[in-house]
Length: 329
Image 1 (cartoon, rainbow, N blue to C red):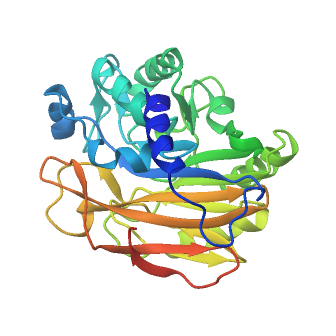
Image 2: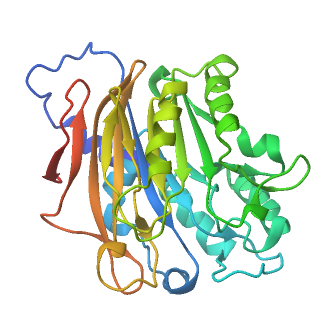
């Protein structure tokens, strides 16, 4: 389904002339799209059961990309036992997997809700996603699976994407023989980044982090310091989520850091910053970042996102140290 949608978008693109200075023989580039937290239980789940498509207003952004990734902030399963914690999210496989397949090529499961119904539900999710051929990373049946990168190769550019969680409960961490998520342990993350190049022959490495304090508009010291450490270890960009709010972007040594994309599909928040999220679009070549921008999504009372006309969000280009705040084209 997603391939068909891309073809339709591509037919429109064929009619658009090259911008001044662009050459048909330019080095190949790939566009990746990252979406923030996607929670398909509670009110969004009820809306999906009614036939509502929560992604409908962003069809072109999600499908006009070589690869689209979202943070799956729930476990997709029918079994398992509820873990004692404030919020537990479990989505209906029959409804949510076909929906995700329309728009996403992969999902991160490195977050604080993948273990909401125990390791049995997480294993069930692994089986369901594998059967549907929807790729996932940042978690799995054991520690090795959880730390294995998602490797993609759009237009010959080999990209390794890693996923890590830093938000409690730590009991959701994968073990040698226990299903769980990849926990963000500094030495392990640095080792994984280096292995992505040496063992998986990646041209580019992008960690996707689940971190930070909820509802805080600025990244904390940990986020800032560890972003730099990951780039020093070889990461080409760092993308984050979890705080339920966007947290800005900056460059370090010419590499992009987007601290939090905020919510994409999520209910339960009053009108305000926690209803705002970004879709991040990265244009990459084998050397790294070429250009990037963001599109603003605002969730309604049901947790369903819609574009926010005129809203400004960050964008930039390689070699330019400034970050512009502009409305989407």
